Image (cartoon, rainbow, N blue to C red; front, side, top):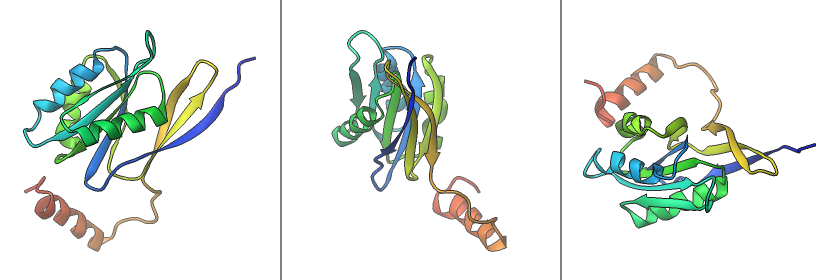
Length: 164
């Protein structure tokens, strides 16, 4: 009878960066994600790694920043789940590129888009690994009060500039 074990891997996210982890289904994913990201913003720096699940079973890579490409590959090798991809970005936020990433035809799912501490929950069998889910950041410890509302609105309007 086949056996299944659970594995937990921590994603490395440097200060000032965000990570997107998702699932795709085709070898051209790395090229299509590159095109989607490189045309999203002239200041966006990124690295992409894609775990090919058949043929040569290689981690395919691309990007416009060698350090971020290397980190995406390092994280993809740790996760080691068939057809998963890891994007590491700097000088931008996931909200700026998520619609482009989701619009890539071969993208099946997005598991996380975050700068928070991130753990990937994996199932592992004799065939390989698959992503079950993620643990993104910490658990809530309360409910925001008026001071929290004020802080959130200030962050969005004055610090990040997403609201007017």
